[in-house]
Amino acid sequence: MNIGLYLLIAEKDIQALKIDALTHPDEWTRKLCARVILLTIYEWDADKVSGRALKDALELLEVPAELRAEAVDALRKLRLVQRKVTKQFSFVRNSAIAHRDPDALAQYRAIRDLKIDDVMNAAIEFYSGVGKFIRVLTALTALSGSPHALLKQWRPDQS
Image (tube, rainbow, N blue to C red; front, side, top):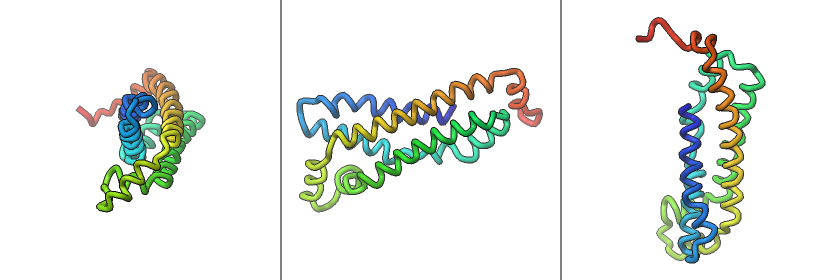
């Protein structure tokens, strides 16, 4: 559930900005919203919330291999989107979002040259990956609520 919430928070942050990134009458505001969307995807890190904990949960619940593969594939898709954003927009992030280049002209050019359509395409890919994982999470939640799974989750050594 923590992974799902982690994803949904990033998705909600992007959702809150996307309309202004696309339609705000002021170009600077559109590009600022696009930069925050980029930063959200750029700094997103699935490994913080998945990894060993997810693997252990999937093993504990005896999740079928097909469903396990879907979960791994959804997270892989999200990581690929994040890597693509990192590669494509690292200059913008470093120059005009996170670190602010001391060369103000370079900073301005990075902002001016930012293509909002490219940012939105990355956001669409991110949404697609989140949607895929949430569908898998729904199936995992149903599986985890079965009597067998509930017994597997209960440990006598825990109070």
